[in-house]
Amino acid sequence: MIQFMEISPQQHDEFMQQHPKEHFMQCSLWAKVKESSGWTSSTVGLLEDGVLKASSLLLFRTIPVLRSKICYAPRGYVIDFDNQRLVKLFTEGMKEYCRKKNVCYIQIDPDYPYRVYNAKEELIEEHLAIVDQLSALGYQHQGFNLSFDRTQPRFTFRLKLDRSEEALFANYSKIVRASTNNANRIGIHCQKENNVDLFYAIMQDTAERNHFVERNKDYYETVYRCFSAQGMATCYSATYSGQAHLAAMDRKQEELSEEKKKCRTKLETAPQDTRSFNRIKQIEIQEEKLAKDRKKAEAFIQEYPEGLALSSGITINTRHRAWLVYGGNRALLREVGANYAIKQFEIRDDLKKGFEFVDFFGTIGNPTPQSEHIGIHDFKKRFSGDYYEFPGEFHLVLKPAHYAVWMQMAPKVKEWLRAFKKRKKDVQK
View 1 (tube, rainbow, N blue to C red):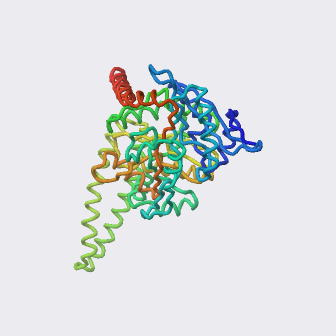
View 2: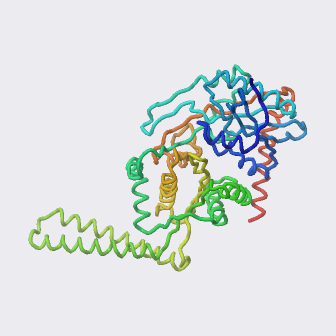
View 3: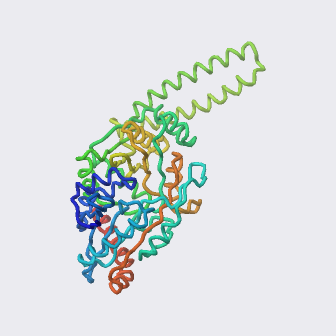
């Protein structure tokens, strides 16, 4: 016997947290986050002979003027998309259920591996049939977009946590290893935080530098409050201390002075020792840089005697997985590597918790030097995770006339909302 019905959020969460499609956006807590921006929610499931086989968190929002609704299953459904019979039954249930709720169209963007490449850019998975399979059920594919121009990004990096921390670190790019080691050497201090105010201040700095409109602080507070209360969110920070840096420079200067002394001793007995001569020159260049860095650190101490958090991030996790969802970095002292140190600290924490992977939460599909977001892409790529491509967004239309009107209206409404948010932010400054 097949039943499609509303189920409790608890039933859905328990099913989702044990399913291969486990995702924090399918957690009922995500509905609590979206309530603040006008979404309502329900959880539905498909039962076969009394056993739950598929489920989904559904978000609803009323379309302006038309009064019909959008139904969005974020990164859903929680279903085996390779089981065509099951997907068909679930879709039929969704149609009937959503028609009763005056839904214009159903939107999904499945967390499903369309293509997956490893860190060497070798294709390791390919499941292209999903587009045709969903299209055959009436879902309209919204195209293979390459950037952040849909509700959710179509590409991401996922780092499997199936090795030791040392093995993971050895596989990172040279830039990550060098930057993280430098941050550790100069005393960048990473820790878990319970400070959304600090996180938001750093995010504002990031948004201003990268020319995007940042979400308001209430949004981040809601996300963190909802998920952290269930042990599913962690806030992190990375702090630079001028005093710690000065101490590190003192130690480095002692090492260089001792090495230079040994080189000069060698030259006294072997004046033609070019290796020692050249090494002295190299040391002197390093000493000049240390002197410049010392002046910067001393000036920094004058302004920030207690140090300053340079980087911050919020991770959200389900039972088996983690997403590095939000992160920002100050423009100040970007060369010290705090952004790399904090990511390594987050990954180390997730490794200790025994998670399957960490998801770097979005990148682009056109990584060329001219790409607008190439900096974000390159930063995440350097941690050597697998590069995932999802199939993208699909719409299942229930009210064709309303849908046609909304597709004409939607771009203008979104543009107006972006402009409104920007004006509001400018007024608040």
